Image (cartoon, rainbow over all chains, first blue to last red; front, side, top):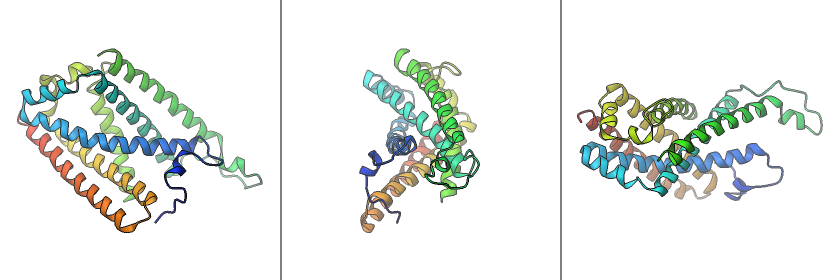
Amino acid sequence: MPSNRWGIRGWLGGRGYRLDRYLYTLHRITGVGLVAWLFLHVYSMSYLGGGREPFEYIIDAYNQPMAHLGEFFMIAALIFHGLNGIRLGFLELGFLLGRPKRPVYPYREVVVQKLPRVVLLTLMVIGGIFLAFAAFEYLFLL
Amino acid sequence: MWLLQISTAIVLVVAVTVHLASFTSFVGPGRTEGLEFPVVRSRVVNPLYTVMYILFLGAGFYHGIYGVRTIISELLPNRSLRRFLVAILVVAGLAFFGWGTYTVLVALTL
């Protein structure tokens, strides 16, 4: 079993935590939210099997401001989880890690290198643009 | 299992992009029109969408439940409780995958 001495408190903060650690926490929170939403979505879309009337009934039921806000948060979670997942996938497969360097005290340079940080910032900008589109579509057009 | 977690992530990125494009006015009909019954029906009677939705459901439930299982294994020290919760998740995931697949197949006949 993986050790996690801090439990859920370890998600929230600790000494020496950097941005990547908070992205890890947000990745998990959005992940759990999206799983819950997937179950809800399968339930909601099951009305489609009944034909036009049941489908329009469930779509009308969700046609209210709080539901639109919920949809927007779901899209925001999807954008974040997807883009951060792409970053994690690249790191997992060994891309974007930068060139290894000899570990010399205080080791900072070995851990934090420019390329992963540039990729992270680029993905955040792309995420911000997608989020702006989502806000326009799900909050202002309705 | 981890390799499958990464593979399902790739499937999900593609499937979510295609799925959300149906509700975005920049590349598709937009959110309101995209959810109108005739527009939805024109999508769900297409067998290509059926295949995509079933893949989407399978990848979504595998990826999601594997992820929650990882969180449970890290946070809960009690082995029996962990196993119990993971078993519930797997059963619920399989049931909802079956339910979603059934809906997608029934929708083909709309």
